[in-house]
Image 1 (cartoon, helix red, strand yellow):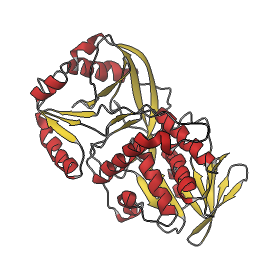
Image 2 (cartoon, rainbow, N blue to C red):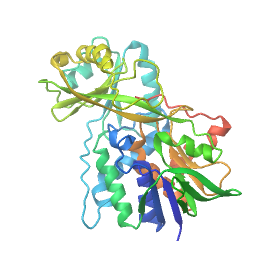
Image 3 (cartoon, helix red, strand yellow):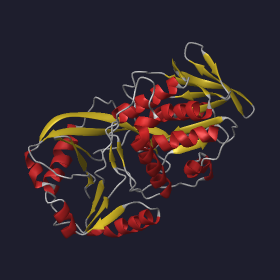
Image 4 (tube, helix red, strand yellow):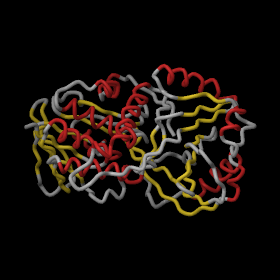
Amino acid sequence: MLQVTVIGGGVMGAATACFLARDHGAAVTIVERDPSYARASSSLSLSSIRQQFSQPVNMALSRWSIEFLRRAPSELATADDRPALGLVEPGYLYLATAAGAATLRQVHAVQRAEGVDVALLSPAELAARFPWLAVDDLALGSLGLSGEGWFDGPALHRAFQRKAGACGARFIQAEALGFERRGDLVTGVRCAGGTRIGGDAFVIAAGAWSAPLGQALGCHLPVAAKKRDVFVLETPAALPGCPLVIDPSGVWFRTEGRLILAGGPPRGADTDEPPLHDIDHGLFEERLWPALAARVPALQALRLRSAWAGYYEMNAFDHNGIAGRLPGYANAFAACGFSGHGMQQSPAVGHSMARLIAGMDAPLIAALTPQRLIDGRPLHEANII
């Protein structure tokens, strides 16, 4: 029986463990330093899913993932649980002024060639479909017609964990510090307190904190924690049919029941791992509120209800995930650095990682190989929110 140790019990590690145990009969051990997941990207994600990327690999991963999410209540059912993920598919809407219209058309051509169900809309068409939207300064909009929306990310994370456990995976609370090696083989993980965990294969899936583990194997994983603030807004306005809207300013918003969730790029330097409790309320006052009120006049009456922050596990190399075998090793792998789209792509990546570790082909993640970091072959993703 294949024995696999996964370092990191967030959604990417849990998905990989689940598919290894369920589909390949592997004996999986998940090592997680904080089982509360208080700072984990998985717990604090906005949990949205889109296919409107600039790179075909990301379109394919999200397409596979949303098809899985639609089946997830059956795929991840256990004897005492049938997960409810609350998946809805109102789409994403990218807006562009004249300055950004050409880029939107270029990306649209790539998306259509990859089979993404997306349409370009003129300002008049935008106004007809979304009468609450101000369109006077717009030149174009790109709307996902299907296969885009949002879901309950923490519920997906728990469902992967439960299914993995039901298939025999075990979870251990420990902090991985380093590895034992013999030639091109990793033979064990060394943990705080002196614990050693062996295995036939090892996976680094520690999200924003994967870099030190890669360094312990002599592999540079350019992944760091970047805080992003999410603001919860109350408003009497109704926005029927509201997708997740990305304004030309970089501000985004979507509905959540009768509430509005909104965010945008950080104001200052994008420093590594600032405290999650340090919400930048100036971002809301100076950038978000003016942009929201200008784009949706009915939102001038909104009120800030609360806010939270989570971490992007940002890959500074090219803003794309790192998934595959680590160069120089026969049995060490990584799945990290997804730069804000890890939650949505976790089903496809976890499934592909499990296939790769089990000795099978994994074409969906071939472009995300860690080898590209060494070769200097960036796969730049332009559509980062």
